[in-house]
Image: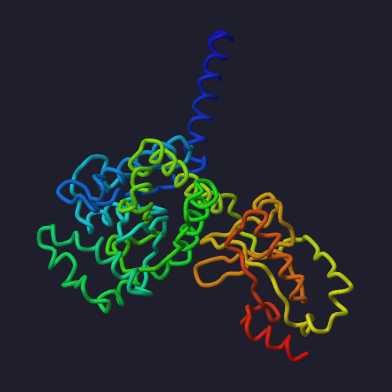
Length: 376
């Protein structure tokens, strides 16, 4: 056997070893981040029809634009409950998401109301907090009466009864914090990027959200009953802008789940000294075992406490609360300083940040902390 033949055999064996090694010892393919996009209504169910605008068409156009943006991102998989003008049962939409083991479920709709009401709001599953929220959910839930065998599919759910929603929150409770966090990101983008009216994050008993077992939100993008807002949502410009903005919020949510590590320790950044004037001001100082931090985010997974993961903020801390990790910035025993830290967090981009009180290593009711402060 010549040297040339031996060299060829060695080369072949080396290639085989590399291939076998990579298949045996290599890492498993990373699971994609699965987003199920749900365009509300469709087919025989037009949704809201106001000023000549059809909710089913606008919702679909926005959803397709969201998907177009997300599909450009590596590691993201998009699944649609519908991609055309077709009728899909509400419980089927949930089944699609559950079968895909989705990481997020986002349902897109348009609202209507008497008068010139305008603005966007995002719902998470929950009890109807007021009559308005109940009516919004009731209108969206009424689609079940267009479905075959709805009595069995929804076990006698009565859309006219607020009491029927009490049980809806139980199965989704595990994902409520994540859903609220995503909803906050969406509303913040609508306000800051689109400059649209922010009607806030709300809770109501939407059946389509109840059917899913992952963080889920329902976005009411605006009011078709308002001529100006309806025209905007019905335009290519409005649909493109909304689609891109919602996609950015979803990717922002995903970014909070990236860079996951096993560490559960407070970061090594040292606390900045509290200003001397604040320390000497007894009316604003609290007992040394009670102090304040600023909650800036919440996530179902652990995120590395590095400043670049939190828009440059330092002195970071995380606390496991049920199935969610809460992320905090800053630490001070002075309430005035805490308010300054809160403003810094908001200026950095954490518009939903708020002050939290601690006693030792545990969360402590803010009202009790302030009561203690007032007595000193």
